[in-house]
Amino acid sequence: MDRLDPRIQWEPLQNTVDPDNFTPRLLALLSNALVWRESNELRRRFGLGTNDWRVISVLALNPGFSATEVSEFIGVNKAVVSKSVNTLVGRDLIVLLDGPRGSRPMYLTTEGVQMHDDMLPISMRGQDIVLAHLSHEEIANLNALLQRMLVDARELQILENETAANQAR
Image (tube, rainbow, N blue to C red):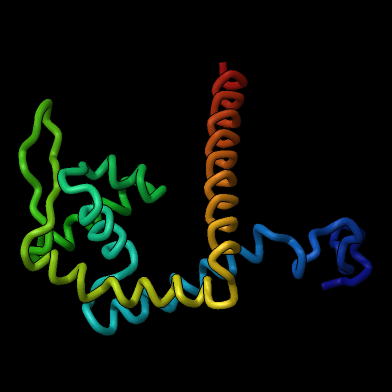
C-alpha cells in the first residue's frame, strides 16, 4: 500500500476513548473473561455452556417461565435461548409443557435440578472473583449502582428504538 494515499488514516486519531479508563470497555473485558472461564469449565465438566447454565439458573428461580420470559430475564436473543432449550430438552434436564394460549412453560427435571446444583459452584466462583476485594458495604453499593445502570441502559434502548421507529415513518 502507498503510505502517501490521503484516503488512509495511518496514524492514531487524537479524539478517542482512553482504553484504560473507559468504563464500558473495562466492564466488557471483565464480563468476557468471567464468561470465558465459566463456559470453558462448564463445557469441560458437563458438556454444556454458559447459555445452557443461564437457562437452568433462571428455571431454578422461576419454574414455568417460557423461552420468551427466560430471554427477557437474562437479556439475550430468544434464538440463543431456543438453542439452549433444545440442548437441555435433549439431555432431559428440562421439560416443556403445554400452557395457556399456546405458551410453553419450562421446568427443571430431577436431572436438571442435580445439574443446577453441580454447576452452581462454577458460576459462584465468578462472583467470588468479582467481589474478592470489596467490603460488604462496597458490594451492596456496587450492586445498587449496577441495578441503576441496567435500568438506565434499558430506558436508553427503549428511547433509541422509539426514535428509530419514528424516523422510519
